[in-house]
Amino acid sequence: NAGVTQTPKFRVLKTGQSMTLLCAQDMNHEYMYWYRQDPGMGLRLIHYSVGEGTTAKGEVPDGYNVSRLKKQNFLLGLESAAPSQTSVYFCASSKVASGSISYNEQFFGPGTRLTVL
Amino acid sequence: SQQGEEDPQALSIQEGENATMNCSYKTSINNLQWYRQNSGRGLVHLILIRSNEREKHSGRLRVTLDTSKKSSSLLITASRAADTASYFCATDHSGYSTLTFGKGTMLLVSP
Image 1 (cartoon, rainbow over the protein chains, first blue to last red):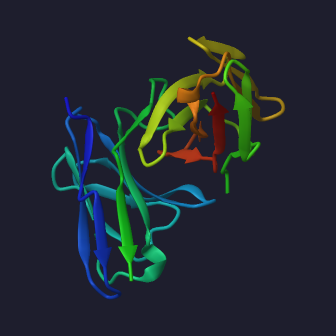
Image 2 (image 1 turned 90 degrees about the vertical axis):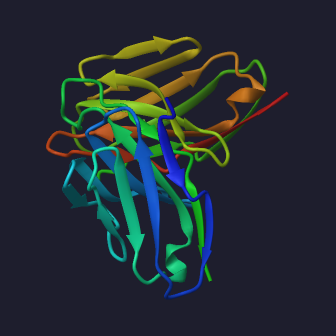
């Protein structure tokens, strides 16, 4: 099993350009998450999905859109990139949601390092 | 914000020493988890402790939870250079479908 994979690994954009980050998981997990990580800020949740066809906003959703057309894929889009979106983006997935009595460990991808000039 | 806070922000020790990191949070939890992040990599789950548990062990890791003080600690015994990484606590709060991550503690273990 590959676990959680992210493409691309690195990308440089110019201000105003658009791009899509792809996250894929092969663990049949219901829940998927997109985070950004900036120095000194820890992990901040951008958007998440509790199942195929559903998405919800996290802590810092502005400037991003997401789609979950297939259970195994979660796409993060930047319609018009800004320098403030320079960051490392992590995707994660979990079998169950927070609040469940079951174990809700999150599995992370290796990250995408994005620079917006 | 319900974000947990780790303390200290950075910790430097010698191989063989023990490392202790603390995490505080603001509202009641279902469980608390610790993750490790090696430089340039994604986070890896280490251990989960439920709100009705006070202590849990996994190999060289020992986690404690004090819900009355809303705090947790992660102890790594007999540290190795390979333990050099950032460590994050994450809290699971009722009514939320997501975990809340702290800002992390950077641990440096020197040979």
